[in-house]
Length: 241
Ligand code: MN3
Image 1: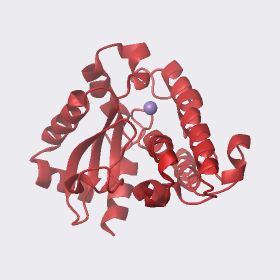
Image 2: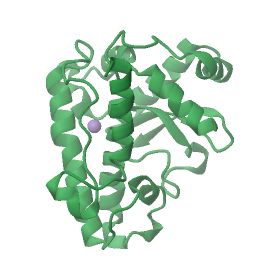
Image 3: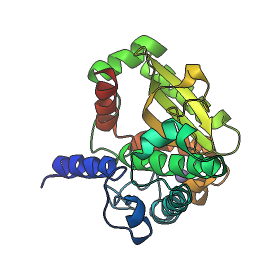
């Protein structure tokens, strides 16, 4: 299996883990598991350090999954598509809504986040092809897009995410959400900021504090080196299809 095949397989597995049913003891009953990282925890060094990746994937993401499992059980909701569930929380009992919003968002956002990164130099250095053209057409230039996206991450007060989304009318937009909310969450996110995320950046302190401490802008600058532009282009093509 070559590297590209491996990454594609791992990405597919990561997507499938949102809906399939095997593995992880705590989740067997509700039909979810956590996919392994599609690269070694140290593979994103020096931009993202191995200890941060290990704790982030092995502790933080696992905690979201475990708590999501508890909340789904308490809701009498069985195995299903977590993305569909968090996109429309109306089926969730009131007393479990916040837990499913936070931990379902946490699980989905992190599943995406791992595949939106790849070792520096393993793929294109920036957006190419149709995605590159759309970014330039929308934001003026790649640099202008990166500046806007970085600002969305830097200005997000407290914990949250910066996003590049494809809106329902097929346009690109940079947005930001607090906590573990994401741009699919209708009724929670402002209507104009709803869309399909094709790139997202975790700006919770747990994503960068060990290496960057209070310097969130330095983390964001370094993070561009490990963006998996092939995966972002795949997401763009799928969202436009
Ligand atoms: Mn995180």
